[in-house]
Length: 475
Image 1: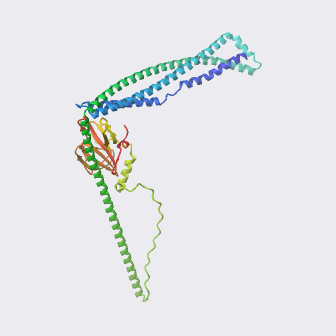
Image 2 (image 1 turned 120 degrees about the vertical axis):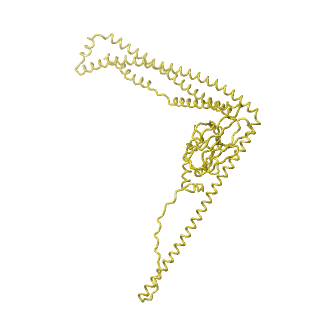
Image 3 (image 1 turned 60 degrees about the vertical axis):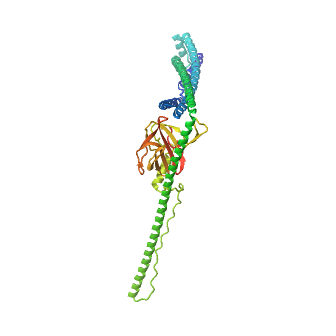
């Protein structure tokens, strides 16, 4: 029995050890690491695009606002990339600390297993005689006790084999953890070097930005003149667009009034026809009654003509609440187009295949001349010279205009919404054309100073300006 008392603790330990080792070997990687890697790739792609945009603007003979915008965009993206790398380093540090803890735990478990196995080996050596084993079995008081002792001896042998296997598995797991730890250290070293390189590049970009800014600052008078000219051009564009929209509203209102007058006239004519028919029917009935009385020589008063009572109309359910009446949505087609446009808020495509916003909607401070505010009626998108400009939603072309300083302007109606494509160099549609989403309507104009293509996208709801950036897809 002393033999069994020594054996039981070893068996309990070895039965629990595999579960502990399995739990340690199945630690899941945090998904945020993958998210960081994805963000890093996206930021690097955007930085590459910003570099290409900067190269295009540098082909100009003078410093321009495009260079300054491209440099600021690069600095912003590179700063975000550095922050992303720092977050990745923090995760790597966490993995390294966890790996250190795992290595220590596994080393401790391995030492314990080796010590326990050594005791087993010593005990087996001391009791290696076959006679002792047989004597242990045959010294049982009865047959059942002998069977149990034989089973204990068998389990003991299996336990020794498992103990040896667990030592080997633990050693292999420890080696893998050590390799993983070394790999994490190498990753951290690479990330730290990458972060340092990015900081050096960021410092160079900031110096270049300061140089461009100072040179542009020296041309402040020229910039103010350009700002005032663009502001005047934008006012002309807005006045023309609002005039067209008001004309559309007035035409729809007149059409609706004419339809209402025609409807009332038709109702009145129908009422008169019904009244005349009723009187004719009454006269015919009276004449028929009089003729019938004469034939029968009976002097009686003709019976009055009775109108057949109308069946009461069934009660109709109250109409569901609807959107406020709008003359631009007077037809079912116009209403459906408006609702479809609204349902695609934030999902509309860009008017160009490649480009970035260089002028945001609304009022902003000028990048160089701080005392002047710039207000945009839409968003200005920089793209390649002569790039194809496409519609962002299906609709009907209502106007194609030429405005000095702003090139061609194409206005497309979508129910009560209007999309305006300003600063086009050429157009390929005309007033009245039905267009589909993504259809090419012209090409972007060229800004010679910036050495790039430009197009402005405006969205109106009636005569109210909208921010196009909340309508189109994010990039």
